Image (cartoon, rainbow, N blue to C red):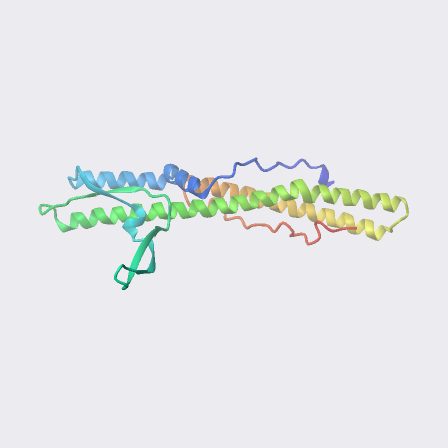
Length: 232
């Protein structure tokens, strides 16, 4: 029977903040490391040895938000004050060099193009890691819900239905209906575990290589079998 099959439980996972996940992605992503190395090599090939300043990836791409508010000054005049809030908490620093008069414009353009590519990769890496982790956590919680609550409850319902049938308190139709509901709950639980392991693979891949490794898991609804908590 389906309940006799030993199913691998999802691993116990420690809840992490999205900030920690994004930082981990920036440390581990291969494409970020390659882009950093390419930028350093390009700087050396252009004869750039000392950075005059550093900018972060969000500033470089201009991805900031501004909240403008009305402020009354001491003279009673209305002024507008801009308060800057960062769209993202974590950033990587990118060195900017003083090209000077001796450097050609093409060299500066070449370097800034590579710097912008690195900045874009960093922003995308954070976004992919955050999205993959959200899907991973959702599928993990749904799978645990089936394992810890829905399936044990279905077993209790079927056992009680069998006792009532043995005592001639209900007929075979009710017994069959409860057995069918339990089977459907087991199928839904198996699908939830499948989606979890796909999301787990995608999440690990997003922290290292980026993109989707498992084809993208969809979140399975916890009440997908309709009457998982129902019965008699």
